Image (cartoon, rainbow, N blue to C red; front, side):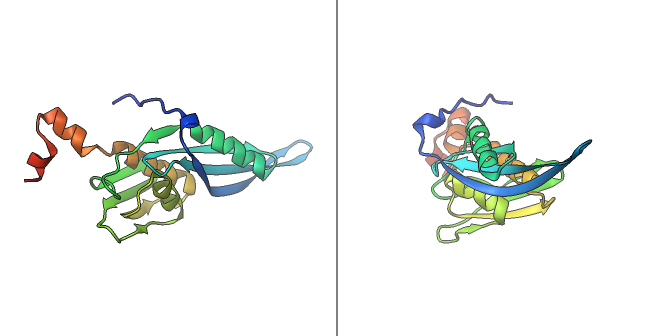
Length: 169
């Protein structure tokens, strides 16, 4: 498994998207404690994306914590033009997400949680399908494993000792 490079969020123009907000109730001896859990996706729109979960007594605090957690969890995604380089399936728990490259003009064909992830990554033409779990947490994590498994075609050809034009012929 390759090591992930550390990406400094301070140098990027990062935008955040709230994927889901859950009301969580903990039953204790004195009654019920209400809090909120927020799932947030952040990205610069140019191949850097991250996700995080924040929990707090109020919604804005939970979102702020989620954004801070997401900034610590950034990955770089190889984007080929406006789409992903090759088809890939990401898995997390019972959630599976299929990402397929699409020609220009297709747009983002994706559901809510996957759409937030690929938009934040800067992919504008992609076909996706969420298979299995519909839980937003599992779907976002499955989409991230799919994006992390993507390989950069130029880097792959360099490793094989060929140039990219030779591979296309």
